[in-house]
Length: 274
Image (cartoon, rainbow, N blue to C red; front, top):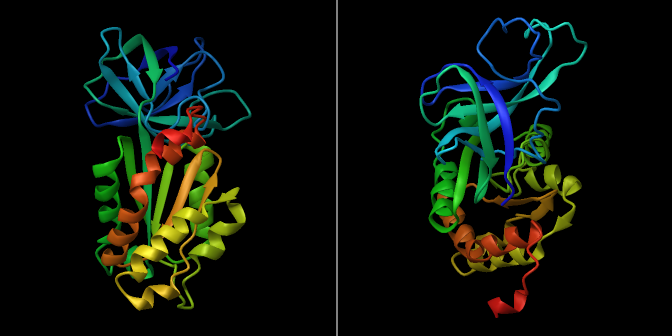
């Protein structure tokens, strides 16, 4: 667990408010809308310094802010005479925040989960998402999580690929689970969307999911679910039905914490799990 110290100029906000953190030189005019400011450069990077789920603690050890994503702010929005758009972390207030300069310690504990439901009808608001919250609840029951966020998108391979790359490489999620698009229907393109960006396949997860589903129903044989790594993120695709999500998750969750530890550089001997 690495801890870094930062001095921020905080904007007053209520618990639950989410504001961007922008580079604001000490000589700059106040920003025309609510932002937290940092006078030092560069801003913390979402995949290296402040991965999503990173918390900022005050001197008494109370978590005051949490990184929940990022956004792009052009200099004109910040009233800055500069040519470059800033990539700004989004900070959620975990307590009421008073305006002023404060030194905070940033550190991250546990894992961040993103879950993505692929459904044309769901994205159009015509169907309630049941498999997505099930993925979150099942994972939360077995893994220590510092942050979780769900997404609903159509069955579009480019949209899925772009979102997974942003969540893994831009925001630093540790685990991304998808539901839907793993079958044989014309719009089932989840494997085709993600296989080109995987750095390493995880065939053990794929086989475990297939075995678990085949034990319940022979039609599971048509599943094309895949798993792999992208940077320091594990990406696993699950079928779309609630039943299949539960079966597949139960098959892989016992190994996920260990897999994430190894992906993040844990040097311990794997033999201890034998």
